[in-house]
Length: 343
Image (cartoon, rainbow, N blue to C red; front, side, top):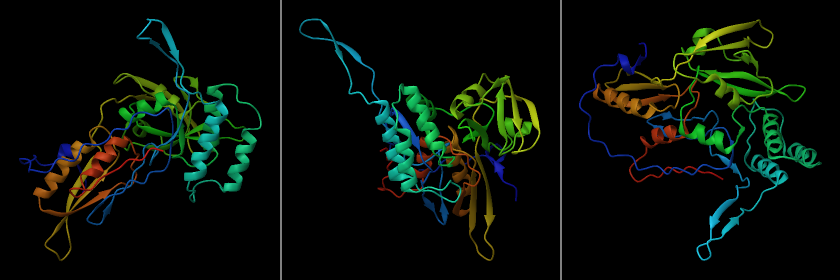
């Protein structure tokens, strides 16, 4: 049986009463964030949720110096400068190094890693002084890229704020930063929204992005290039990609798609030799409409006779952390607490 999007599903019957999920705790944005592979899991019957935000699990934070504030004294009306405690560039890099040292779990897809190798990398990096904050950010970015883990990356405070609050719009692709032999960054397509603008134009997983609107993007971060790909609804962006590692180079004109489409596809399946049915739900990404459409799908399947549910997150690109949290809360028993950890 083919999976049906919500637009093809039968009309939604009157909603049944259901306890409202407990309000979620929304953490304040942090100055600098390292994102690690995801591990948010919850079970519904025999189903398991596991997702990553463009990256993933608990966001690890490295503190940066806060800007000075000017406040007016209450007694004499004089302006008094209050300066936050400063963090040096070297301290920032070392703190980012420490987060990885304490929490990184290498897998089969990452490069060889050991505490000894990681310690040597810190010693090499901190041999000289780091002159600017932007240089410190660049060092951290390359240091994390050397891990070979597509889900570990560095975000500035402004980038993290944008990513945590809004859907990433554009042409529907997720980019991975890969350092080349010279230390420069190449951007390779890590994932695509199936049938999205880029996928429909011919972009495939593993392709290298070379330029956006004629601008060479070598050395730019994945987030910077994602911003270049965004634009007003139904406008076009021209991209140049190299297929595979040694394939041909192709220029494509892709129309941007701003509206968040439903990521929920579902079907009802009868269990063999049993009088029960299973509701199968595929979640393609965690975007702004994911929770709302999932609730609708669950109600429709339940009213159609589903006794169990299977959530399929294969090929899920990740997305909004808060959307994933709200979805997980749908399957918690009353009184259970879902916590997000930022360290």
